[in-house]
Image 1 (tube, rainbow, N blue to C red):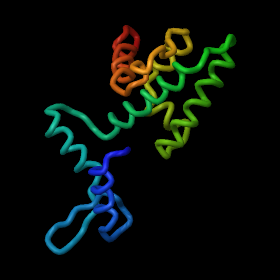
Image 2: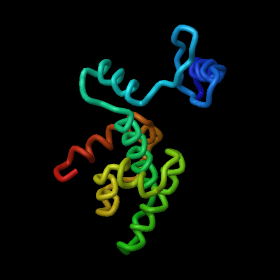
Image 3: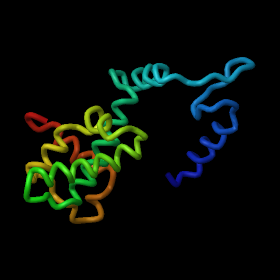
Image 4: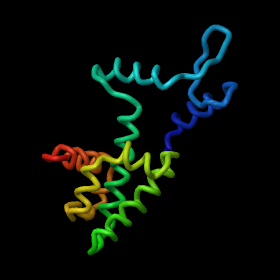
Amino acid sequence: MRSARFHAAVARLLELPGRRLFQCREADAVRPVRAAEVNAFLQEVAGRRISLKDFRTLVASVAALKALAATEPADSERQRRRQVREAVIEIAEELANTPTVCRTSYVHDAVIAAFEAGALKRPRTRKAKSPATQAELLARIVARPGG
């Protein structure tokens, strides 16, 4: 991220004692912010059931969509599975997870199915590579019957 405001906020968080990035001050102590607290906050703000996992799924699925849309599907099913595996390995590294957890928990099945069926189109314009466009494409793929 290139946002000076974001970097300043992270720098302030890093100044807090302890090993966790997300912490908060309460009275005279600093305590870690738990995932359940973040999830409760997200649900309150969104007005619906949502969690950190939803964001990880979105990030992983858009990354898979981007990587696979830029890949010409191989002729054989075995080679296409290898292409998917290579993309998932890269995404897993970004998420600090194993490829198996990344694939089974975070990359939406519809993205993989669309690639394997040859239904992903390579982006043709700079606009098509924007995060908003990728998220819109992901939403269309996931909304398809069976997606």
